[in-house]
Amino acid sequence: MALRLVMGNEAVAQGALAAGCDFFAGYPITPATEILEEMARLLPPRGGVFLQMEDELGAMAAVIGAAWGGARAMTATSGPGFTLMQEHIGYAAITQTPCVVVDAQRSGPSTGQPTLPSQGDVMQARFGTHGDRPALALTASSVRGAYDRTRLAFTLAERHRLPAVLLLDAVVSHMREPVDLPPPPPPARRTFAALPSGAPRFGPRAPFVPFGVGEPTVVTGLAHGPTGATGGGSGAFTADTLRAVGEALAADPDVAAAVEAYRTEDADLLLVAFGITARAAREAVDRLRREGTRAGLLDLGVLWPFPAAAVAQAAERARAVVVAELNLGQLTLAVEAAVAGRAPVYPLLRADGGLLEPEAISRFAQGAATGEARAAKEAMAGA
Amino acid sequence: MTSERDAVRIRLTGRGGQGIMLAGAILAEAAMRDERYVTETQEYGPEARLGATKADLVVANRPIAFPDVVRPDLLLCLSRPGYLKYGRGVAPGGLMVVDDRIAVEEDTTAEGAAVVRLPLRRTARELGDEIATNIVGLGALAALSDVVSEQALAAAVAARTKPEFADLNARAVAAGLALGREARRGGRSAAAS
Image (cartoon, rainbow over the protein chains, first blue to last red):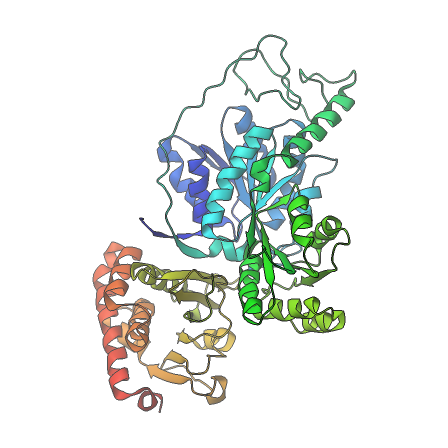
């Protein structure tokens, strides 16, 4: 093994190159800036394109344009920039444009505490743009995970023709760990086959064919039919397309495989977390086990589509479910819906820029496991 | 996966511009070269310069779960603002290495924690540039604690710093190691007085 000490944000850039990314547009923002810096360094010598745009609206627009130009395109930002990108993320959704957006979450809202971590963009990743659309949001709790999930984001974005989101946090983005990453493959030229005349350009099974290949394609943010033309039942076609894409995404085994179970086989106390909070929860599980409590963790490497089946299955055996997250209860809503009364769900929440530490999680979870809701609440107040 | 029993938790703190982020990466690189598990995280304020900064490391013989440091076993402190924001709460039996120009309140370290005051900044200045204080500090920390080997530290410094400063940094490592060894021979309590 050739171990190298790599930062989470550097691993994102390496994962993007491994996926064949050849276009990056962005605007610098803490704690995502190292991704932009790495892509600025790595892409041009490989014949790729790096653009620093005037802002995040321009960055997301450039990414969509590049995708329609035949590029594997991505951007990276943090919460405030992610908010500015929502308009165009909706455009990417309705135009079925494959692309990747990395959001290194920081404490908000607004400028907030730029250098401190948060997990406050869970719902923004799902519902940040208006209208209904299929949403894909992956997460990572390690440097290796940041690399793997970036690759997966490109794979799923292309397979399902949608904007894929990778939610990191300030700690994972800036964390260094020794990892053994393969060298990036040499840049490969993408080729696309022209569609037969009259074949659908849009729809759940229509392949993505960029501009300049075959007949002209109409791309519009208006509701459209299979050729891209508006009017005449296009509202129903667009709604059906987006719903079908969402269903295919939810059934994709690669999505379900992003959930990492840790010591859940015999667990009757289930912890659910992601990102840096899952690292703390992992240590909390070990502490609880040493104290004789059979605890286990689901580290959710995917948040949307929500892995409801995995959570429900693990909750079958649980006396209590604890959700730990760095916000005021965003993931908790989805966990409660998936658990559906199989066990009580106790949220452990923090949203001031600080972390939930292993001891706070294990103390809270112990209270939840013994059914002492009051003790759990007191533990949370002291966390 | 457990990180608790054999893990050493380390915190480096100073002010923005002193190279704390770089020092964290160097120490992590050294631990990796010693074939140990390591995580390194960092935190800094919104200030581009002069604000308090910290790097947290966990070094262990097994995979590490939680990378943040709550109570450091080893603390290297290069500035008063860093000490005030991040320099409290050294674990019992722990070790704090602090520049001798920084005022340290006696009641801020745990029972049984040793405080070693060393002329880190002055030594770097005498080598030609105070910018090398972080490297001197790493050398002292390594010699006092054995958290990384001297060879791995020297190699990590060479790998993670610019070639034009290679000579200065190599001398800074050596000077820091010498300071640490001397303090260790003299006993931590003597150095703390």
